[in-house]
Image (tube, rainbow, N blue to C red):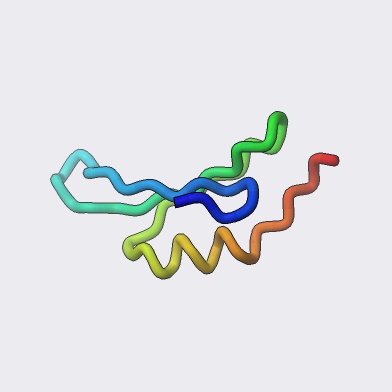
Length: 53
């Protein structure tokens, strides 16, 4: 799923738990974060304000 410049994906961590990640795809931003639910990742994606112009 993609919301603005932020892409959301699902993965399994080392312990086999399902996690969601939100990553800004803008060059030079470097923002990313892991979440335990897709709802939290979507909220972070909607509220992320990229500082790269």
